[in-house]
Image (cartoon, rainbow, N blue to C red; front, side, top):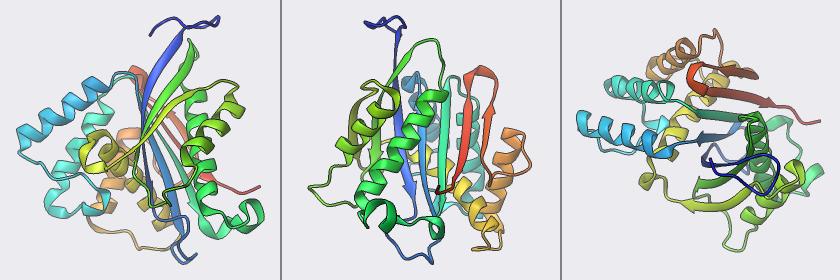
Length: 248
């Protein structure tokens, strides 16, 4: 933490962003989700994951879609690393796309809609962080399939500034997830939460390794249900927030 120019000290954070589903896909693909993991000390989380990989000799990319019965212990241990960490948070924003009217609010501009929803996720997450200072964040995002001339970074920065009244996002970089273990962690956390919503919406029956991971996460959080809006705070400054988005 270093002192800024304002009355509160400035707190610099690292954020890791991922998504599940496609915002522009047909409505039959019902669930779209955004996930953001925030770290106060990314060096420790990164080192814990690398040590885990080396100990387990597991060097594949962590992806929620790859969870199977044979690698279930690996993914449970990955969750353990997150929940044993201090001063980290996860925020998930989940959408039932049938409730979204992007033509009404964005004139069918899916790329702008994506940026606006990412900005909402970041703003909500920063507001929920410690009030001991003014939070500023650099966001490392999984590279998304948008056009080369899209204005994703600009939209995110502008919308967060409007909401928080400061330039809280001081950088956005889109990277390949296979190179960033923390983005992979976000993928897994978001994927598990999204699967619980798919069960809720009747898209899947809920079975096998993925359902086992839902139950394991619920146990870690001390809740009986993942697929609902909730704010959970644990010891050591760990926060876990889920919001089911409802269009106004």
